[in-house]
Length: 65
Image (cartoon, rainbow, N blue to C red; front, top):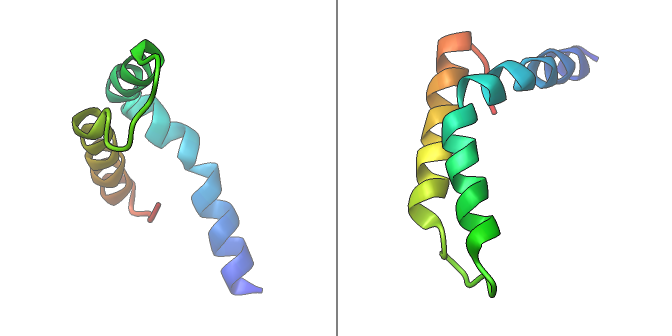
């Protein structure tokens, strides 16, 4: 059950990750919301920036996504 407790601890850190990347998340959400007909890779740059921010924040906190 060690894996379950590790997963719970990781999930509890998600709010901190999202707070640290709120600006990138806002830009990605705004891009998606501005599209009438969302196509594949429509907001790929915004998504990459958000994802990279989450990954860097996770490393800083010592956790995985």
